[in-house]
Length: 473
Image (cartoon, rainbow, N blue to C red):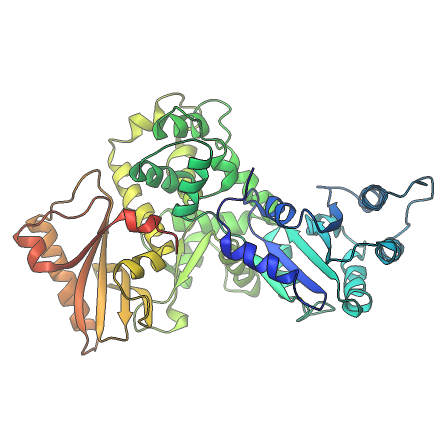
């Protein structure tokens, strides 16, 4: 299978092949996001050695596997020698094998599921640090790739390492789910043809995780696919929620508590509100948990308009987690047709509204492009005052502010008198709360656009559709 999308990531990986020094690259992201596939495909001609950690393997298991991979990749014929007794010896053997390699191009040394290799009291990380600092940095022909799904380990021990790897990473890639453009491209590559509205509904339910999208069946509607994956007996995504967090975080109870608290509200929560609802205390541990959720793409942090960082709002940004907690968990084993039965209910409308807003926030670059402000410096944020709330505010350096009203609807939206009064109230509340001389205008973002009538013509300056979110930028 060819690589779909990932243009920026591929450019980074390929650029490392052209440098005149050894490179240390960290690739991290949630499981099933395509990290291993990306590395193997881009570097398939350059991988000199590859080892993947064994889940729940002991130090002896890991060393045995390490020895096996050495004999395989370096074609060592005499495999009767004793296994390395520790990681110090294992890395010495690896160094000797690299020294004997006759490859002239950059040689990729790929450590997949790196956190699983670092078993308790094994000193794996210590000797890996020594391998990089005392061996690799003296060469010019190596790319050492550290890859892992365990976010808590990758963030703390690699990205923010305070020991031997402090400031040693030369490049890092945080692999996130597909954009809408990449999702559409992925489905088309598998000969699955959906309209943008269908893809949007699918994306709002399971996100842009490649492994999930691989399970979409050709010839079935989005509703049929969601039923089969999420509600029918043995559906692959029925129990994925717990498995995701167990694989990513060593102790995931606090992470799940935060995600549940955010899923229970249709707006962002302040740190204090979030801790109160998730029954967690102010502590360094909680800060680490939040950082890990943000780094892994499950939670987003937004600074409200004209506020400071301490006033940040946290919002659940993982589509599947929201869908699981709203619909799958309460309807376990409900069976075939469940999603069609749930669709007419009010909870469906509430979910689509919040989920569509989340997707729009992830595609802010496409929205700015559609507004024709690519070259204008902007800041985007949210705003809330009493009962009035605006989920997307685009503050522009060309003396304008766009207040974005976001609506998911199954047809062209008709602005009613009640909608008009609601927007009028929001605009007035925003003007009263914010001290600015900039022009303030409403932008309407919806599925199929906005019908012209007296209300829309008097209130909305720009109307853009979901189609712009599918652009490749």
